Amino acid sequence: AQTVTQSQPEMSVQEAETVTLSCTYDTSESDYYLFWYKQPPSRQMILVIRQEAYKQQNATENRFSVNFQKAAKSFSLKISDSQLGDAAMYFCAYRSFMNYGGSQGNLIFGKGTKLSVKP
Amino acid sequence: DAGITQSPRYKITETGRQVTLMCHQTWSHSYMFWYRQDLGHGLRLIYYSAAADITDKGEVPDGYVVSRSKTENFPLTLESATRSQTSVYFCASRGQGDYGYTFGSGTRLTVV
Image (cartoon, rainbow over all chains, first blue to last red; front, side, top):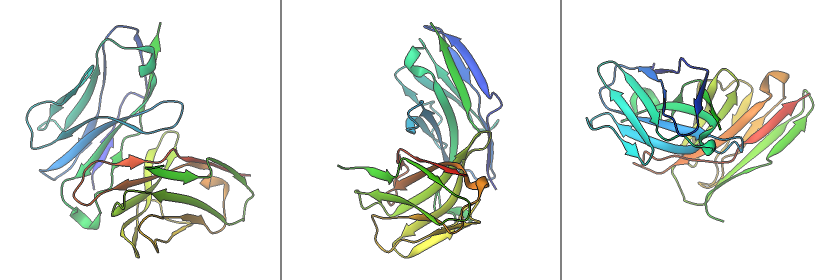
């Protein structure tokens, strides 16, 4: 079974600075998707960025970028020029490319990292 | 409104009562999922459905029942609520072949 580990329960960053959130995962599959979700106090789950494992190029979305290391099974999220609105819980998630093991492609989540942004 | 709607947003119930959480989506997505979110556990899959009348258990299904008689609705029922089921519940959907997910806004359930 696949697992996702976020080793930093809480992180803090100064406004305008850069912060990196860590995520590692365990899988025997070669094709899969990885995601970062943001959950602000409103509880809404917001997709920040996604990465297809077969793509070597790291995904970027404006101030958000990932460092995808497939061999190391690592998928960290870098937030540049941090803003107060970035304060939230961040979840790393994994999804099989195919419907392996009877699963219908559900997301497997890490436990989350709570990010605080200091003004 | 287009999207995925969960109701109620907040619910307080007593131990032993039956509770149903509603989920409705307007995209005709094939796949629907129920997750629970607990501090220190992230989101864990309760049940999922690949289509109308096709459902299956996830990681933490005990004490829950689902049904999917129509593609757009996927209610989650707690047959006899327990305090350990106090949680935030999220419904999500995904289209066939689509790796993008859409989440509802969640239901915070408190069992007293």
